[in-house]
Image (tube, rainbow, N blue to C red; front, side, top):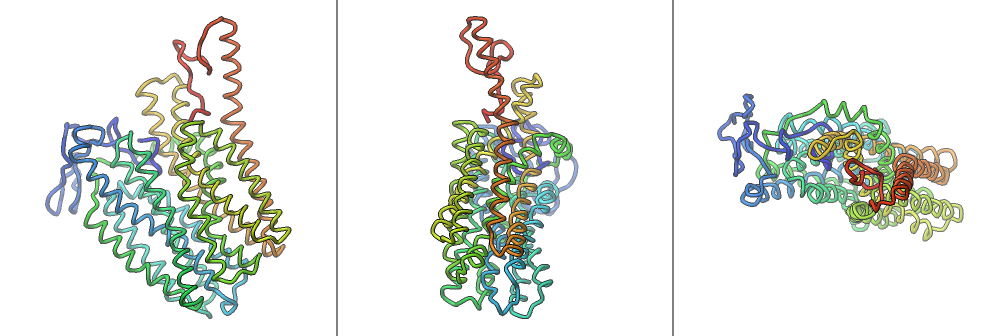
Length: 510
């Protein structure tokens, strides 16, 4: 299992993550023929487009066949995940169309926006295992077609007079779009060699995240041209896009027979304290990103009395910048250390939140927008830096346990890949918490200020945890190393001493 694998429990049975079950040195991707394609583990695979042999770590195989096949699957995976994110954030746009005639107050709208976040977070766990159960291509088709349900039902009920309970149930259906991320990342992880997983998974994740501002831009276009009385036009655009994504996935994507589920890795990751520490930090970054993305338009309408058109013209900016800058956070973490970037990022998020609180008190929309958009940018940076920390943490843990070389790398890949699914699911729950906090804040105080104060406290906690768990021990080890070097008069490099004088890996290096 690779460090970058975004979902729990999926592995492929080779040192390079994927190979044939028979262990043969296959140079080409071999698809099964006929209605039943035999699996090399003895169990039949039913249906076409199954690749029985896949070895991306083999340079010859990758150059001759693998790269082309993997790239094709990546393209159509991005398309499906992109539409999934758009459907997941559908109700952040629908509530902008709900004027006074709908009879729903701001607190009720925040609750509508929060429900898809909850369902999407929960679905990320089973979606992770679905790829190995039915095949990546097959599940992409199924999960894409499932997006027709929340879209079609929303088209039926989006009119004044519909009960609030009905809106609540329909908004929960949109959570299926949130699950697509986990299965898409799991599937693409299996297609790429270790040296290219970071790029491939980053592109897959970024392409999906941009689905949030895209549907918000579409909402702006509809409100600006047809008016706020026509929310069904947004839904009408996505129905054919969903069908197109499913058809293209069926025609051009592939299933990998060697991919199987490793539930033991998921259980082992769940027992690791670092899994839950990183889940807390991911709540602070990704939870903030998705929560703010869903709530931004409602905050502008409720706190600054913006019209639907005025709100829609601003809501897409933050999610777009946060999605585009995510790879930069990962690159900075590579260069300076994930824990350092994450700590600095939480400090900056605290400052931006302070600016938002000040703007709310002064009722200054320009200052508020400056602070809020800065928060979006920082959540994107934090998503990249925390994502890069996870594999390094478990590899460093392996080194601390005395493992070396490929044994340590395999340990780190297995646990970090499984932890990714759990961390992603818990992190998404942060979006639920943010929208519930806004709901309560506007319900009791008529303003989002109390919610922002709570968020400021949370960022302070996340920063303190980052320092206490990942940076303070490193500083202590380096002081010990300096003392050891000074005492022996040696010229060893800075860092904790390791076996045979080698520099011992520490968590801040991730």
